[in-house]
Length: 79
Length: 222
Image (cartoon, rainbow over all chains, first blue to last red; front, top):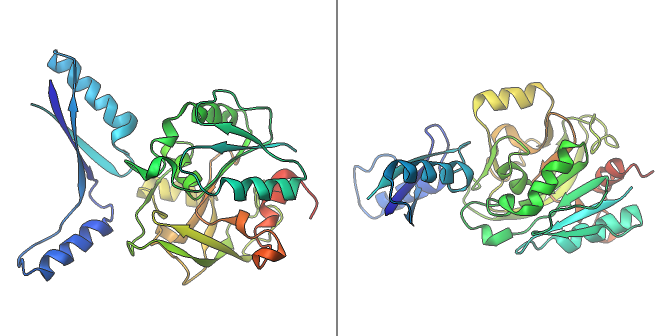
């Protein structure tokens, strides 16, 4: 089974990279761009066939390594 | 007093740390590799700076999950002193041995220069040879030194005197919250800081402001 994990910065955590991208977009003439926040995407292949188990494993992976929960949130999506 | 230096692929300040500890203590530190599960009986463990694992995922994230860091955590729990400098600081926060996180510099630029540090807490094993409020010089060289902690954590570490080093007014190089440059754990034996005191220990460095940190930690007379 395949899964996609999205890691994003928590609200209230300053994102200087997102801010720089936001400025670059307006510099390119894209008007009306509000806030831009940068995140990460992980596509993970799993041998597990039980969806509930896979989801629990993926969440554990996020907590233990893929996300720093001090500053980041994560979302798990199973394809 | 004996010391050990943690070695990980991608670190590049390990030789500086080994040289500083050797010169100051008169004894070469033991070295431990990322896969080592045992650390010799030492008083101080140092995690040097650099770019462990190429800063992949997040700075220090992969290093923090290596077997040697479990051994460091066990030693820290027994009261052994641990110092993490630069990437070593990032590794300690990623390992959960220190609170908060270190994020990309607010300028988005790598900073490599000398800053001024204020000794905010001179009542630690590491800073006891400095005066409270003393301003010292120290080099910094990093891309991700922007310290962040949520409001509750920040209030706690500020209230408990766990902020040990602060960038002196006007010299904050990275946007770090409350100008925080270095923090200590609640037990007072694990210190992390972005500046490099090991690079300012003798006249050839242009000064020795960082020397007292190691002399204090190692209990060596100045």
